[in-house]
Length: 182
Image (tube, rainbow, N blue to C red):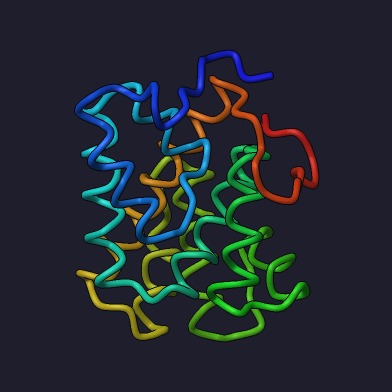
């Protein structure tokens, strides 16, 4: 059971209701994470804004690869569950690719560069080496895309922290980390 209350749509904060309605229109449902973050309308607005902006720049496969790597690094079962579902059904990644992504790897060379860099950003809290940065840029990512990958890590870190603090009830097929996060 969640350690913070997850309101129903009817009991959501008044200023969160229009934002949650947009989530429902887009996804067909409102996952627990959104209702939880909606306890703070300002937090929900900020989360949705950055998520929407990055959705215009990074392709869905890259975003899901990053989300899986970061969730695994942070031991977030909720995000692993949600992003495994999205990686399978939206990004059309296969089970082998998803398992690799969770480790910061990929069968795809460019995908590998992005997800490996993202995992390094998460593990080092941004203190990546020059070699880490060079590798992602050699794979064809621009300086702007390096910033976007870094912000995608931060966005996923944010949801991992919220879900780990709240112990959010998982409303996707459950997936758990390979090992407990440190």
